[in-house]
Structure formats: C-alpha cells, structure tokens
Image 1 (spheres, one colour):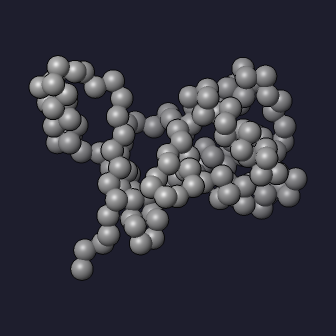
Image 2: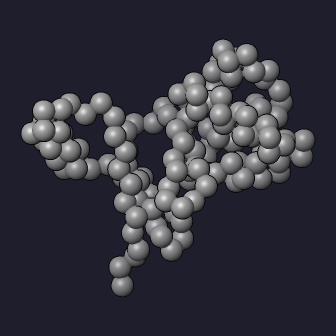
Length: 131
C-alpha cells in the first residue's frame, strides 16, 4: 500500500504509515470513521482528512476495495485477498465473508447461457438471523 501511495506522489508520513498498518490488520471491513478512530488512538495527529485522502488514493490504485453496503457508509478491505462474497447482518451491521463454489458455478452457467464470460462480480446478501 505504501508503494501505491508513493506511485501516486503522496508523501508517506507517520500518520499515513499508521493508517496503512491499521487497514492491513483490519478483518472487519471498517469504514473511514472506524479507521480514523483506530489510527487516532495510536497517534492523535491522524486527521479524518488524511484518512479520506489516503483511502481515495489506495482505492484508485486498486489496492483496497470500497464496499457501499446498502444504506451504510462505505467500508474498506484490502484487495489482495482471494475472491469472496459478503453477507450483511441487518441487525448488527456485521459483514460476514463467505465463498461458495456452487454459487460461482451457477453464476458462470447463467452468464454462459446469455453468451457472456464473467469478468468481475460482487455478491451481497442482506439477512437477519433465523429464529
């Protein structure tokens, strides 16, 4: 991620380095405010503006993915992870990653029947716990 910032001409400050570390360690799809709180806890000089600017550059460089889950602030994750889909718990807002070969095959079959090859896709399921 630091290389992507350098390539974009962004200075690698201590605050940006900390933000990159926080983002790399996140496993919960944090939004910008959560990333700011986590980085700010380690360095009060980290500003929300730095968080937004850094996220924008990293997203443009393709090293993080932005997810705009229904009605919620954008959330982020590193893009170096294997393909997966998301289930969003409507009660808690938790984002649960999953992978299903059955779903992947079905999507490919549907695309092929329509004369297409899938290049990229995102699947988001919005759900409530049973019971």
